[in-house]
Structures are given as structure tokens and as C-alpha cells.
Length: 343
Image (cartoon, rainbow, N blue to C red):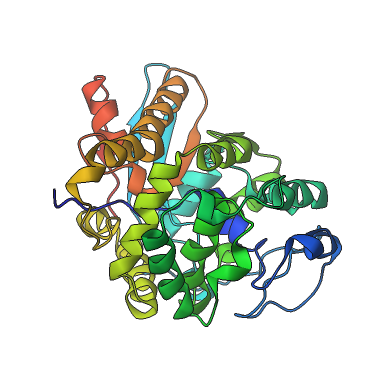
């Protein structure tokens, strides 16, 4: 079976990558959790301090971006603006388009996948770091994946001058997160500049309600409870990954997001790996858990807002909107008229 595997990230995965410093060991993880204010480099990424905020990006310039947005009007007059987000951007993406900001400003509620600012809490960070490691110090990554999968992942991480062996006492979900975040450091994009975090901070500053469609706990639990077979499959796909093509993938995805090109985003959300026939059931399980089930929950959440009487700016990852099992298709199947917003 030649089928591609989606590689879109949860919002929380972008933030979690900032918690995983290259070269950490079980012995110094508590020390790392207590540190703050260190410079971030490609070799080591320290936990941000509680009072850290994103860069001030307000300017008077206009924007040429046209990120995908849709509009649904409910029977009670509520206007729901559905916006596709990208969880890591750069300073050149700001200011956001006037059409987007007008929809945001006119809303009474901002709905996001997760309030990423909650991850700044040092207690949350310490707990999350601790959960990345096995309680039994003799248990290792080798107990959960094959040598072939380990070798493929080790080769890929080696392109970033990182040895997988330093993470042997981490759980597969944590190691997967570290590997997935490596290209971000070389892409010119930053999770601190992500539109989710930016608009969440603006909403709080203006007293606007912030609603979490999923929340950090849900997303972390999802990753932690993937089967070993899913991570085995994911690590085997590193066979076709290089530092160059994964960094380019992020850049291409960013460019497609800026243009609101949903066809390109749907194509780019799949990587180039071919999944063997032996993993058909595992791949189906992965798609259901990571994408399709979440799309349904997100669509249900949007429907509740459509039935209400408040204007809502509903923003989740752009990859959740496309396809016949995406949020737009699900809403249309449920009888709603979803109109693409033109710039």
C-alpha cells in the first residue's frame, strides 16, 4: 500500500518542542525546568519564563496575505468566522490582513485549539517534562520500537548533529515531538510568532472570551496514548526524511498558508513516506485519532457556536478544514451554508 502519512502538528506540539533541550538527561531535567531566561539556540532550547511575551509586531503596513477563512451565519444572527491557522510564523507575516482583523475584532469569542499561554506556567512545564521519561530507569526507547525504526530516526536526527542515544530514556511520544520540531529551528519560523498565540494575547488584552476547543491536556494525552505501533510507523517514515526536505516542507507550507491555497496545504500535509501494507490498520488508526476524530469534534464545536447568538472567530489548524472529512465538508453535510471569504 502506497499511502502518505499526514504530518500536521498539534498546536501544543510546537510549544512542547521548546521544552525539549538537546542533550538533556533524566538527571538534569528538574534543573532544566527551574531555569529561565537563557538564550535559545539550535543546540539547546530552554524553557521560557512566565513573563515572556511574543514580539510586538503591530505596524501600520498593509498585508498581502490571504489566509483561508470562511463565514457561516446562524439562525440567531451569530456570525462564525472559520480561520485556518499556522502555529508558527515569522515577523514578516504581521500585521495580519485587514479582513482577518476586522472579523476578529467584531467577534465576542475567540475559539482556538488550545490556549498556548497556559504552557508558560513553570508548574505545567515541570510536570510535562517529567511525563516525558519512563518511571523505570531501566526502561528505554528500545523496549518499544524496532531496531530498524530506531536506526532510521537516529540517522535523521544525525542530520541535525544530534544523537538519538541521549533520548533513550524518553517515551516515544516525547522523542517524536523533539524530532518533529527540529526543522522549525532552521525554517525562519517561530511558535512564539504563531497566530494562535498572537490573537489569544490580543483577545485577553481586550477582555474577549477565549474558548479552548481541545486544550493542552487533551492534545498531550492524545500523543501520550498513541500505540507503540503508531510511533514505530512514524519513525520508519524517517527513511525518506532529510534536514533539507523537512525544512523546505515547513517553508512551502508557510507559503501556501499565506496564500490560503487549501489544495497545496492538503498536499503538503502529507509527507513523502510510503507506508508498507503491514501498517494499513496502524495508519487508519493514526488518521482516525490524530485527524478525523478531531475534525468531527471541532465541527461539532463550531456548530454549537452557529446555533448561539454571539459572533465567534473560530481558529484551528488549516489542515483540519480541507478534504471530505474536514471541518468545511462536515458542516456542509450537516446542512450549513459555508461561504469562503474573499480578499
